[in-house]
Each structure stands twice: as structure tokens, then as C-alpha cells.
Amino acid sequence: MSGSRTRVAVVAGVSAVLLGGTAAFGVSAWADRRESTDPAASAAAPGTWAGEGRIVFRTTAPGDDYGHVASVDIDAPAADRRVSSEVCDRVDATPGILSCLRIVRGVVPAYSATVSRPDGSVVGAWPLPGIPSRTRISPAGDLVATTAFVSGHSYATVGFSTATVIARQDGSSLGNLEDWRLTRDGTAIAPSDRNFWGVTFADDQTFYATVGMSVSGTTWLVRGDIPSRALEMIAENVECPSLSPDGTRIAFKRVTGSDPGGPHWTPAVYDIATGRIDLLPEARGIDDQIEWLDGDTILYGMPRDDTRGDSDVWALDVDGTGEPRVLIEHAWSPAVVPDGSGG
Image 1 (cartoon, rainbow, N blue to C red):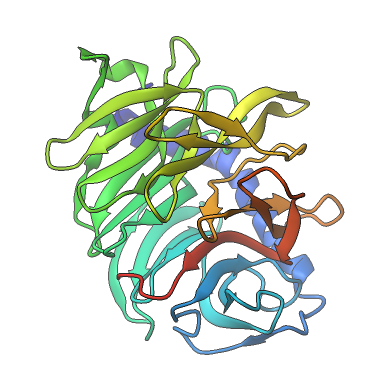
Image 2 (tube, rainbow, N blue to C red):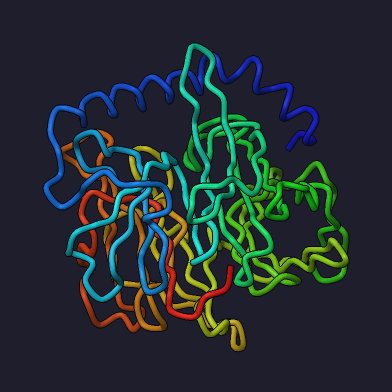
């Protein structure tokens, strides 16, 4: 893959065609949603997404609230949702801050990352080089990871390219992961043969992410060390990792076949200590960064087949005994904020 400077240059030419189409789709879908309202949602002031023991997400319910950040009680996900004035395409949250990745739609779309407090005040804001894809906040709330498409618009796109950056709350960057040292079994991997996405933090020093190898076409789970700016490849065919609350397992999506639009991804769980991988009973292709509801259940977004621009958040037990079930209707990009979280 090309370096970060080349990726920024690509945006000027690619966004007008590839990404402009995405912006047009978003505006159209948003306009469609304004025709009706969600009875379980009501517009509210900035910050009403906040609170411990909640699931924060992007609402896709028809009506004026479409695209806004909302939240529900973890113990009552079907109850009334709080809807804030924040508008985001991808979110993550702690009780103290919200990471919001946004497409600023217009003749030439722009892309931004914002970190804000529950009262709506902005801690940090910076531009993204392309379409928002993934964001995660470290457990203590000090670091924010962002992934954006610099070319292409999904992980099923041939030749897609991403930029993944870890930054502090105020936006000061710790660097694009492409510039970090990557090794496999002690051997350094050339900078031109890698592409990163989907960070999940263990703490403010250690994280996991995906690296895609452009020459071999394979994906790997990597473990990153922030102080040394180093990454180590540890398991093949792992994408969009999500670390469990106890830090012992990683949920992810694994290529298990092909669909008409590209790869077929199946949710799976990797045991860090043993290296064991268990596929979970989900027949549909999952293209999302999984979120842990608790130590027994994972969450992920699934688009609705019958309504363009709409989606639901589904839940699945990691022991493989239960069927997938809808947890939150009209929702996308779930972020679980348990009691006692940092931020």
C-alpha cells in the first residue's frame, strides 16, 4: 500500500467519484428517514447519550433523529432511547467522552473526528483523510484510534486503502500505524506491504488491530506496543478485533467463504492464551467491528434488507448455544459503557 502522504493526495481525485457517491447515498437515506418518526426516540440536548450502564450507538430510526447519537440502558435495550444533538457515522464512548467520526456532506464531502464531553464541549477535533470506518477509545479514555478509507468504501472493495491513527483526546497524533515497525517471527515487514484497520485497546500501552498484506492478500491480528511503536503479527485470517472485558479473548470477523459482493465474514472468538479459535453460529456475513456486551455476549450491526440506510444491532452468545437476536432496532455502531468505566 502507498504511504500516508500518497493516501492524502489520492483523496482529492478519488473522493469526487468514489466517495461522492457515498455522500449522495447518505443524504438520500437521511431525507427518506425524515418522512416518519420513531416513537421510542425524542430529540434532546447534547450529552444525553452519556451515563454508565448504557449502550451508545448511531440511530438509524426514520425521522428527524436519523444519524444522531443515542443510548439505551444496558438492562432495558428496548426501552426509550436518549437521543442527543450529536450527528455521527461511527461512534465509541466512555462515561466521560464520545469519539465521533463524521461525513460532512456537501458538493465535496469532508471527513472529521471529534472528541467531546457529555456537556457537548469539544476536547479535540481533526480532519480524516477519507470515509469514517472504525473508532475505539482506550479503557482510561486517554487515547482514541480512528480508521478511515482513503480509497474504496468497504472491506469488500478490491484495492481499498485505509489510514489508521492513534491520537490523544485533543487530537495530537501518536502516528499512523503504517509508520510503525511491523514484525513476524522477529523478521521486519516492508512498509509497502501493509494496511491497518480496526484497533482495540488493552490499555494505554497495548492494543490489537488488523493488518492486511497487499502482496499475499492475507490478514493478520497484530499486537501493538505504543511506547516502542512496534507491532507483532500473531494470528492469520483475523479482522476487526475486539478485546473482551476480561482481556483474555478477542472477538473478530473471519473470512469463511464468498458472497456476491465480496468475502463472507463469520464472527469468531480467539483465545489469547491458547490460540484456539471458535466460529460462532451466524449464517449471515458480518462486516462490522464486534463489541462485547459482557463476557458472554457480543454485539454487531446488520443492515436491514428491506430498508436502505437502516440497520439493527444484534446480539450473539459466545458459547455457541444461542441464535442471533435483535437487541436494538434501528441502530448502528454500538459502544457499551459498563458501570465503572474510565474516561
